Image (cartoon, rainbow, N blue to C red):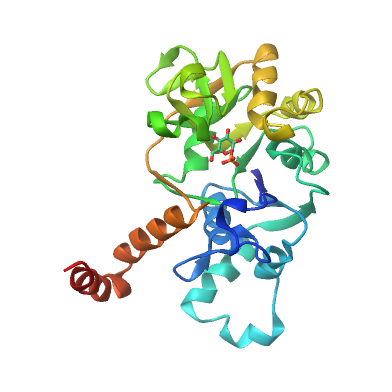
Amino acid sequence: MKVVIPAAGQGTRFLPATKSMPKEMLPVLDRPVIQYVVEEAVASGADDITIITGRGKRALEDHFDHNPELAKYNDLPAMRGLEHLAERATIHFVRQRSPRGLADAVACAAKHVGNEPFGVLLGDTINLCEPPLLRQLWDRFEELGSRSSVLAVETVPDSKVSDYGIIAGPQVRPGVFEVKQLVEKPTLAKAPSRLGITGAYVLTPAVFEAIRSTPPGRNDEVQLTDALDRLRKGEKVYAVTFQGVRYDIGDRFLWLRTNMEFALRDPELRDRLRPYLKELLA
Ligand code: G1P
């Protein structure tokens, strides 16, 4: 499976931390977020991953590259995981020349992806799902005939509607919606439902043509949501709910919360963190 991971966004919600460091390199415990995303792709069956980067994102390439000076540490359990990823998947990097939107970033991989369906995961979002989220989406894609794009959605609270792409359409089987409308970050009053696009997709290659004919939308950027709204006029697009939890690390509260939750699940950290938190809050 080919997977494209857009990681070219500027991370302005997390300045100044992201001034000279890609937001995808922010650590959750001891791993940068991008590593969790690549792990999820590989666990879902990806053997070919293209990360879309941009200016100031070189650390992403270095993270997955071999480092001879650190080779003696490669057998440490923590480093083994990283080596394992490199053994299971080929990781390519493509630079987006300027931040022109999520759809434009995905289109940077068009030549490499070619004429086959592919997965997309966002470089700043960790999905803790079993089976892994992209695997769940790919299984749905196959169940639905292997010719329609499938995107993950979840119900979002009213206060968050304007942070998401929102879809609407009839439920055609439990947890599967045939998409009839997609709107990028609508106001609550204009939102056609509360089903928010979470940022994981299996797309047909026809999406590239849809992106080419999509004009810039919100923020003057070419939005993937708008391109998918074009795509669904030519072929079916489905939205599906999924099992699991999504962690967006895009601002300081979300990042802190993700670290807390992961630390409370970590066998080494939780026994020290629990009493510490109790003491701190007392
Ligand atoms: C992107 C998409 C949006 C989606 C969101 C999920 O927006 O454009 O449709 O709902 O990811 O996180 P961003 O968060 O990059 O602004």
